[in-house]
Image (cartoon, rainbow, N blue to C red; front, side, top):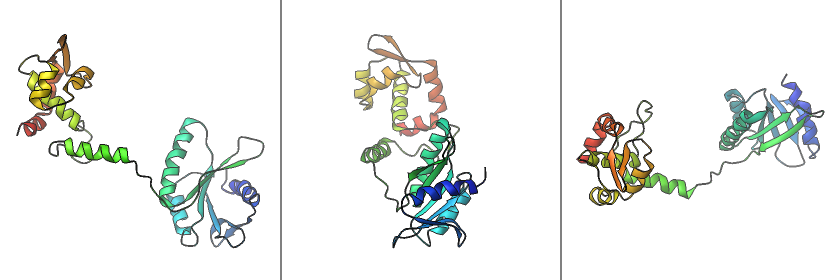
Length: 226
């Protein structure tokens, strides 16, 4: 496929919306004009790339209505790519189009329109971020780490419980009170890390994996005890 094959379907699509369309105007692949509206510029490429996005950003010095267009793919992989591409294009203020050629007549799909980026803040996510920040003791992680599991407030609570269970089996209610870990029962019952086991009804003990975790996270345990 050649980039030029994208031109005719997009031109037809825009003409259907009342635009006059011309190609290769001042280095722009496609320019569309309708009345006194700002011109629409569309850059054509066979794949979404940094080069294409940079081209689109450059065209924004002439108009806010800048789109990038690529051939449509197929399947779940394409759907995932489009989802990510839309997020990126919106942040850059670019519109995104794709042209599908799997039918007798090619079709054009506009995935997002050009326009200023206005992120929608999700209050629940912000609250969760601040809660985790406040609950986490110290700064046990290093930005960019990938060799050791991230130390979350939940993992710190699990380590507190593990330390207490070294002394022997105990009840969630007692652990919650002594350690100040309100969700001790839930942590023990869920056992996400494989550290705990129920030895009898309402009583939990530390598995060998729990003892190993205390060695692995010895620095974190020390900080929790200071």
